[in-house]
Image 1: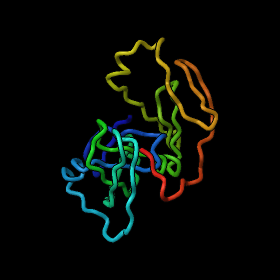
Image 2: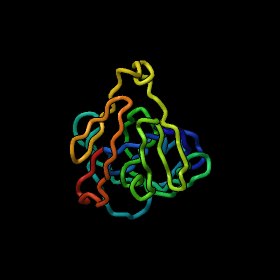
Image 3: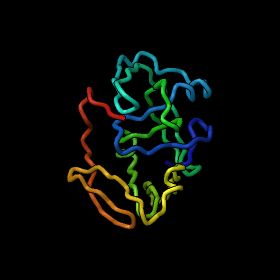
Image 4: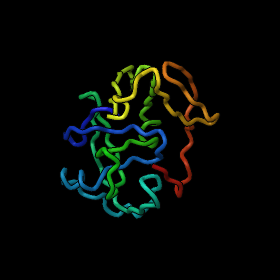
Length: 166
């Protein structure tokens, strides 16, 4: 998680390497008074939040600001459920934006070597550092233990349009 803003409203943003798509929660959309992207003619089934699948047809255009100065404009899918944060940036954002995660140093690197400090969840703060493992999905099923280091390439091909995970 990183600190940031959506349309100049400060919020916590989850960088989710296991999500194909970027999501904004309906409650946050209402708070920001965002309008849906008209006539985009698409819908997706999203799996991964609780049990079952959620279907949505709504998308909104937002400005995401990271590090107080790096601005990105992107469309995000609107979902009615919340996973503890208002915004999830998935791989549809992170790969084109060139985001690199350094889990050892708890940072995210952006183009131009801008570094964002990852925020700790309450569960992570309560876990002693020497006992923490960071699960990491890769083509080889890689697991990186606390204070460990591993490099691997992320898939750069977009998944099929009918496949979306969150």
